[in-house]
Length: 84
Image 1 (tube, one colour):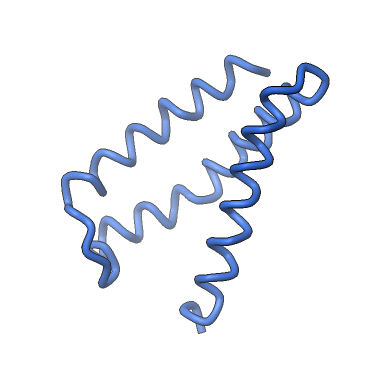
Image 2: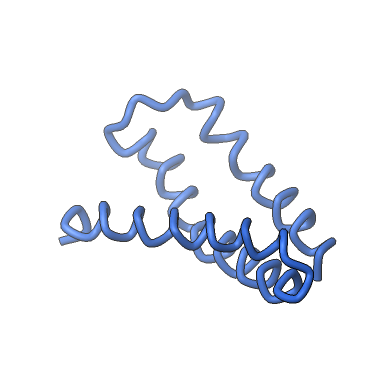
C-alpha cells in the first residue's frame, strides 16, 4: 500500500520544495514560503528516520548520508526560519 503512494508523494514534496524556494525569492511571499518549508521539513522528518532505521529501504544510500540528513534537517529548519 505504501509503495503505491511513494512516487506521487515524492512528486508532491518535490513540487512543494521548488515552490517554497521560489516563494523565498519573492519578498511578498517570503514569510509564508519559509513557514511552508519549515512545515514540509518537519513533515518529512519521520520518513528520513524510517530510511535510516530500514537501512535505506532497499535503496543504495550510504548509511553515513542517512545519519547526516537528520541533523542537517534541523539546520535547514533554522535557515528557513531566518526568512520568517
